[in-house]
Length: 189
Image 1 (cartoon, rainbow, N blue to C red):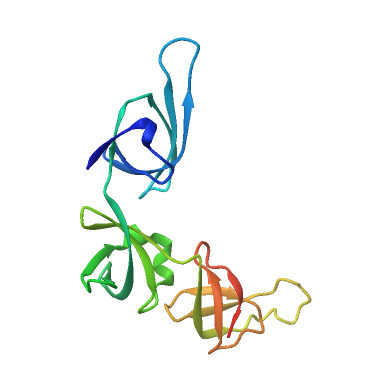
Image 2 (cartoon, one colour; image 1 turned 180 degrees about the vertical axis):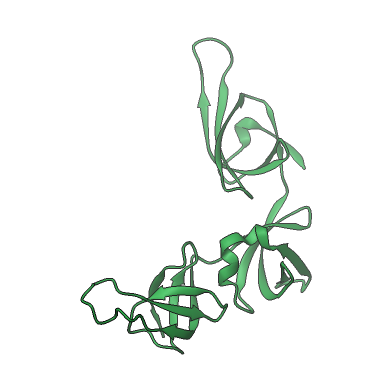
């Protein structure tokens, strides 16, 4: 933990505010007609993802947080927890399912992800925006014959999660999908 003058907080600075961790997205100086100058921040919650506005007097001290981002490899699931290994130190870290949320659907063994660490604890996991998975099962839609242009069918990827793919995708093929919403992007060679 360190202290930093509000005027020195740049975009990307990690701050601790009321026990919550934030990243500075934007900092603006504001000089009202009367009184001292203010510093207005747009902050994004590292864990919550919520964006908030925060205003302090110019020169106010802000508490910085020692947050690091490390590349880790997903090893396996144990109960509701996911076990990751630091690619450099080989230390293993446990990440709770609720910290992963929707992302847990796209964790294939050995997948490399960015893990945000604070006080030696994982506080967030960031998957690549696009990932490639093998289709392990597809189920043809009985309405395939109709002339609708956006016909899709269920396909299960290697993590066990079911996504929607175009009718021409077959079991055993690899596809690229968006980890934001699970949408099919393209075939992958």
